[in-house]
Length: 258
Length: 179
Image (cartoon, rainbow over all chains, first blue to last red):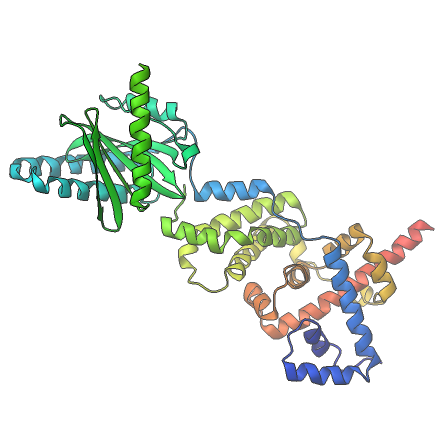
């Protein structure tokens, strides 16, 4: 004989969807209803066979890889696409113009306030680079590829090193314009956060690192071997200091080996 | 190229990526094939990524599975429209419901269970997968499938009975073949 309870109540009870009181009521009912008791066993057997036969399959690794690559766009040797290039050129031209105006209008600016102004511009350039699709001019974790790309576009020699084994993975490089002059930018990644290292030639003597913060970003600036470096990131200053040491040490070694 | 902001990227990884298995599994059962499932699950995940900004908290698994489900149905409409109009003939199939014995036997026979599950119409199949394999509550199933909770209950009940009888049928056929 079919029981009126059987259809929905029994199923809700089995799926744990009944409130405590209703569940207790149903349990009392079941003591006298063979039909419901049997149905419950059937439902349980069905669930058991569905779960025991391992019908649940994990997603293939290729699917995970594709999604990860989409979220973290790093493709070796991929050049910047055409519309973005124009975007960069337009931005560079605007910066050049502003740079020239600033240069002419306020020669006194290039003194004590110089560092603050410079840091401001560099942080802005860093923020710009975080906009979607504008991460890098060349995206590659191969130091030779990035080296070649930068060498063909800059007149000052920048030595490119990947420090992935020390926790700073090379992600690429690009050109930017700071205060109206071309600067090379090396892009590293530390714990999922990008670090931009801006590099340009200088005539000033070597200078130990100076740090500061602006708009929630840390910067660390130093001069070595006629080049000025400024690293910017959301990362800790301690991380920037480690990267500074790695870059300075590797530059030393490559100079000595030549 | 990713259209996610950096902060969103971390949130997406934290909230949505743990459910990649669930996404693939649902697609696999709705489309009944691994290769199609991978393509469609990928499409759904990329779509989730693009529209992640529109996700304002709540149950990320339900949100993702909803996208997977919609993407699967759109794919089925385009590639296998016949399947969506497929209705289970309860008159024929419900003659004999499975007894505990036939179910116990079915437990040893994976192929037969898969086959039985695949003969169900997609709407019943998905509700069983969400409940039995994914462990979703009625409320979550209602959110994912956009059907009222009452309908979730009745569909689940019918889906279970249909699976029972599909198994019973296949076991009778199997017995005949063996003889």
